[in-house]
Length: 171
Image (cartoon, rainbow, N blue to C red; front, side, top):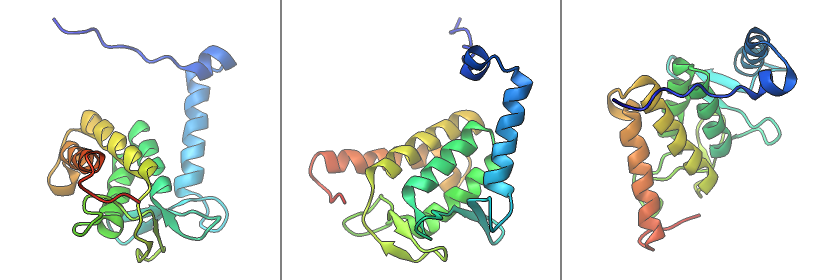
């Protein structure tokens, strides 16, 4: 046989004495606020067209790889595949470097319309992208193209290993 499934600890219930229903209600309210709340005063998640979305950095009025990777991580952990896929498609469409010295990496800063402000990379964004993609592969399985989450994560790891050997450009 295999390993028995592990039930994760819920520190909100353990340390705060909240019921699982109270914890879930709080998570649902936070998700609603940040991802689907009022455009002007609440949300950070903005859908674009039929299949993309970005997380706005409201302090700088732009989109950053760090915020996008955090949005992906929240979406996968809360089992929100539609939002995950929209965010990931925006990342791959607007932030990804398909060629050049930063090939395989992502621009760390873009405008809301997707234009890259700074093509440089930020290692925290790449690391969180990788983990979110592995989590997505485990939770939902792999799809086709950019939605083959494990293949996307492995490609990003390959780029990072290349640079660790000194074969590429960072930052």
